Image 1 (cartoon, each protein chain N blue to C red):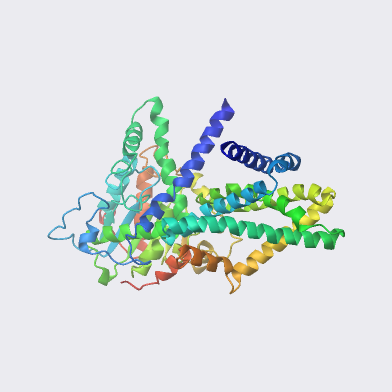
Image 2 (image 1 turned 180 degrees about the vertical axis):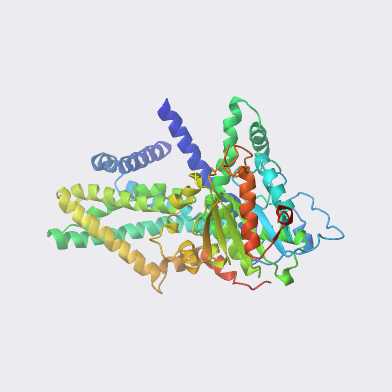
Length: 335
Length: 214
């Protein structure tokens, strides 16, 4: 019986893996990019939606340009671009409140090449809707909601794969470029952009950095407990910060999974960045990956009396301020 | 005709099953029934599966349906050619290392059946694990070749391993020489058959040159 269950799970994983690259490859095959390179989208394109979905109207005035843009790429639990996982909302809102001279952009689903929610406009939308609902219900089916994380994890592996990553990361970079335009980014001014990737989102950030740099953006990557490979995109990031909690074992999976981060591969983009002084690993206290005591949690309080999520925000803000990219709106009141 | 086809498919599947289990005597039983048809079938399907494993190449090059079909068939036939080269290497190295005069016609069916693990070549599609699967399948092929060469060459285990390993290494070396040298034979054949420029993910990245907004 147990053997059969294991066999079914393995078969399910293999099938999920086999179809994982399909979305990115189909996107490329459809030829939505007529040339094998990236370009800035027009305003109409930036407010457009894929397929038959009606496009958003281009507003009369775009948001005012900011000196710095922080693009937040969520972790594996996200299911669409319009809604962050509940647990992440307070932290992202706090970041937006606190970071000065910066626009925080989070409306990107980093595990979909067309920024399409799992719960809308897909063949199995209803299944994903049910899974997304069960995530917040206390019943036996709740465990199945992990399917969303699993699906997104496969997309993370697609991003890290040398065969599919160039296509997948191109599409995500295209989505990020469109989001920047929607938020008032003026390409000709080349304002700095920091991609803040949480967990699996850090891999997507690293992958997209390659193409965003090709657009002329001074791009930086901030990995928040990121599970990321030694992606070639890191070569084009001006600075890489890898923030990690002392008790976070999950982020260590990145080192385990992605061999080219091992010191023996001296010429990998990760180790090259380390050697060049572009990669900084920052410990942010006794934080776990998720749950109580995790980066997003409000409790238990840390020995210094701060909430764990406050400690996370403090570190992100500190890094950005020290890099001269942003200001800390909370600094004066803290004296 | 229908029953012949059914029996043939049974023999093919049985042979591949024995091959995946690295059971040479079991594979030989199925061989007796259809002679060359079964080994050739194993090789062709292995080649098609390998090409399916390289789906990214077909997709990135936006190869159309008919060209895709043609490319899959060409890959199947290419595997027959690769098996023939490996069989020639086994024959030559068998003569060199063991003496005697093994015939290529006697060795080729065994070499073709040793391609049975490549039926799993489609698994190379898997993101992240795919390249690892490709390596496992290669080593699996070597193990099966070793087991099948014992009866084919009529030699003991150590001698069969020496010939199988030498032939396998030589075949790998030829493959690398053809692929990494200016000849780039496989790439040229792929471009010709698929009617595509032979773009890879690396080309996509290279075309996005640093700081050149368009």
